[in-house]
Image (cartoon, rainbow, N blue to C red):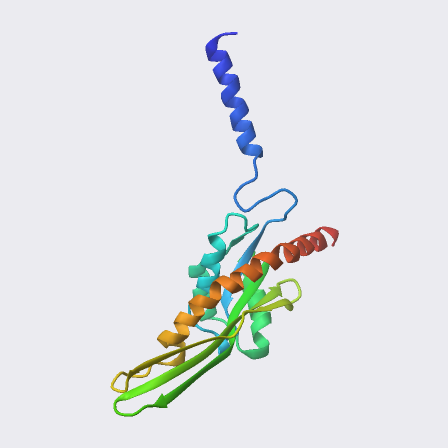
Length: 206
């Protein structure tokens, strides 16, 4: 056997092994799926929450799922009715149109801001926030899991001369959002593989 022939055999074997190796996001015994992440329900959405949670999950090589484009999701959020009882059916419909296996609505069911005027030219801003993920099965529009973070609190003191931003753009709200995102992502990473497995088993059985 010549060296060239031996080299060809080795290259072929390596390519075969690479083709059989699990891709990123796939592990032995675990299903893979595509997730549609949405800022919803709209009445409790804090802009950037879905992106923050998705970024945390995308940073995990052991996450057995991928995501619909965040750009597409942000566009679709503004063109669908995601308020109150219509949120889950709309999220399910969006997931179906994007060929996603599950929709995850990320909102802030706990969001309170209290502004207290201080002495002189200062004021105190106190914020309370918790993030929540509602996992929606697009096959039947049902919310199949609800995960919530701890309730976080933050404060700041600032000049009364500064304009008070809308609550969803408040810097303390956004800081607490970013603190809560890793916690919610960790909960999703623990729960979604089981939901995905159940979903795919049900689909195969049906």
